[in-house]
Image 1 (cartoon, helix red, strand yellow):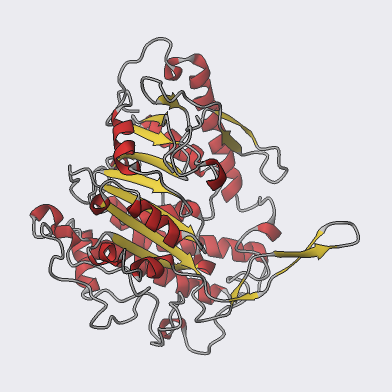
Image 2: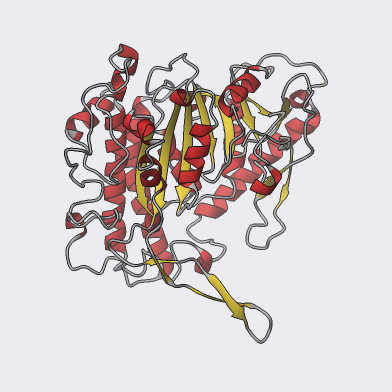
Amino acid sequence: MSNRTSHESSSLTSSFAFKALVGLTGAVLVIQFTIMFSPHIIADNAAHPILRSNSAFIQDPYPSKDPPSSRIANNVGPTVTNKLRPMERKRGPSEVTRNEPKMNDKSSSQLAHLLPEVHPLPPFAEIPNADSLVADTLAGKPTMAGVIAIMNRFLIALHESNHKLSHFKGDREVLRDKVFSSFTELTKKHLIPFDAVYRGRSVFPLREDGSIFMSLASFREGLLDFTLKQAFSHATNPDKIFVGAVVQNCFGIEYTCKTGAQVVGKDKRGRDMTKVSDAPPDPNGIADFCGDPEYKKYCDSGQVRAIYVNETESLGPAMGRYYASKLWGGETFYFQADSHLMFAQDWDTKYIAEAKATKNYPKSVLSSYPPGFAGFGGGGSAGPRLCSCQFSPHEVEHHIIRINTGGVPKKDAPRPTQIAFIAAGFFFARAEFLKDVPFDPFLPWCFMGEEIALSMRAWTSGWDICAPRENLI
C-alpha cells in the first residue's frame, strides 16, 4: 500500500468502520472470485452468457463454408463486401490512416505517438504496417496505431477460437472450461506482453494541457451518437475532448441480427411471454457522429478513436473498459462513463475544477451514479455518495456485494465529500490513474464485483474517492 497523506482523526478513512468495511470487502472478493472460477461450481449454467442455447459458442452463427480467416469476423455493415479477416478491411483513398498532422501542433514530439492517425471508420479496417507498429510498441516505442493493432490481433484470434469452439458437441461444462482456457491463453499471448512493457509507467507522455479522454464502452447502444454530440456541444473546450469508444454491435453481415427477449403477452399464470425476433443491424454511433457535418471535424482531427467488437464476442463491461482504456493518448484527465448520457453546459471545465477542489488532488477520483434523464434536466443535479453496501438478496448472486448510495453532499460544501466506492459508469480523475490502477484483462463476463475490485485497487494505490457536489451528466 502506498503512503497516504494524513487526515484528521474524524476522517472517514481513518475510522474503524471504514477499515472494517475494506477488510470485509477483501474477504468477500476472495470468496466471490473462488466461486466464479471454480471448475466445479457454477451458479446457473443455463443463464451463463456463453452457455445459452443460442450462444455464438454453441450454435455456429457463421454458417458460411469459408474458413473464418477468409471472412469478416465482426460484421462491418452493408457497405463492406470484402471477404477479409476481422479488422482487416482495406481502406479506400478517402478512409485515411494519416501520416501527416491535421492539427497545427501534431508535429510536436509530445504528440508524435498519435501518428500515423487511425481514423475511426470504417469498422475493422486494416492498419497499414501493422507488424512494424506492433513490434515498435512492444519494444517500448508505442504509437496509438500500434496499440490498436495489438487489440485487433487479440480480437481476430478470439474470433477464430470461438468459431472452432462453436462446433464442439460435448458436455457444456467441458465447453465452458475450453472457452475460458482459450480466452486465458489468448490474453497471455496478445495482451499481457503489451501490459508488461508499460507496467508502472504511462504508455504515452501525459500532456498538461487540460485535455480530457472520455472512455466509452457501448453494447448495442442506440444513444452513442447522442452521447458524443452532447459531450462535444456542451463542452467549454471541445477541441480538448478526446474519445475512446468500444463499439460492441451486431453489424448484420455474417448472420441475421436478433432482438433481445421481447415481452409479447402473458401466459395463463400471468407470467411474461417472450420471443426473440430478427432485427436490422445496430446503429453505429461513431458512423452517425462522424457523418454529421457539424461534428465531422472532430473525427478528422483525430479526437475520436474506436475499436469494434462483434456483439456475440463481447466479454462484458470490465473487458470493454479495458479495451477503451488502451485508446488513451496522453490526455491530462481520464473520464470513464456509460454511452447513454446527457451533459450539463461546461461540464469539462467544471469537473476539472471539482477534481482540483478535492483534498487529495491530484490523486483523487470523482465518482457517482448519474441520474436518469428525467432527473437530470440538463443543468446538473446533486451527486449521490456511494458509501453503503450490502450483500445482494438475489439467490443467484447472494454472495456478491452490491454498492449503493447513502445521501447527497451539499452543493455549498467546502469540497467534494470522500466516499468508499467508485462507480464504473462514471468516474473522473487525472490520467495517472491508468498507471497506478491499470484495467485488468482477466475479468471476462464480469459485471457484479467490477466496481468493488476497482475501488479497492484505487484506494490501496493511494487514490481518494470523492462524490462530486454536483452531477454534470
